Length: 220
Image 1 (spheres, rainbow, N blue to C red):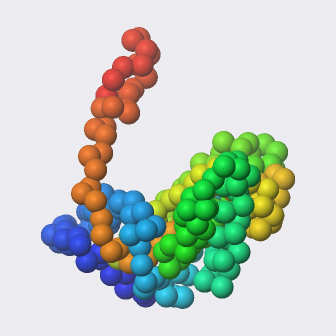
Image 2: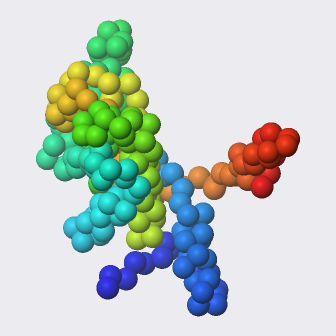
């Protein structure tokens, strides 16, 4: 069984009782995940076995109807120049007045982080009873599984999006079908620097309970 190294910047939790071990480790892992911008990610990135483990984590996402409505397209180093030109073209298409410096900045984004992939979701194919919202939720769960696995391996990660995802040139490059939507890019690599962990919302801000007599009330 592969041993997943704990992130170097995290303190291992104290050994809990056996029945609580998995929950404690899961909580520590989830709470340690942090978005690290691609410009702060560098080599080395995950090796082949580690990357396979990250990608395999996606298969454990909820998937009503077992449609596998999402897919991931890796962008190896040799393909980064093609993506860079697509980013530049997408910028010019939406802003013909873009300066050479801005166009070059758009190109540069393709070369950040050692591992880069595009997440794509199919919102229509397969069982019509499984609507687009369910497919998007499934894709989000698959992505989160991958981010958590990368975190467990000691790597940083980030999701990035932008208007380029809707450009004709990007859809053509990644062969995005008419029924598909390009969701986001996923970047993974070694953390060079990180910001202080941001404050997370308290449970009371987003949880309520349906009370048969009083309606929806705060808390649980």
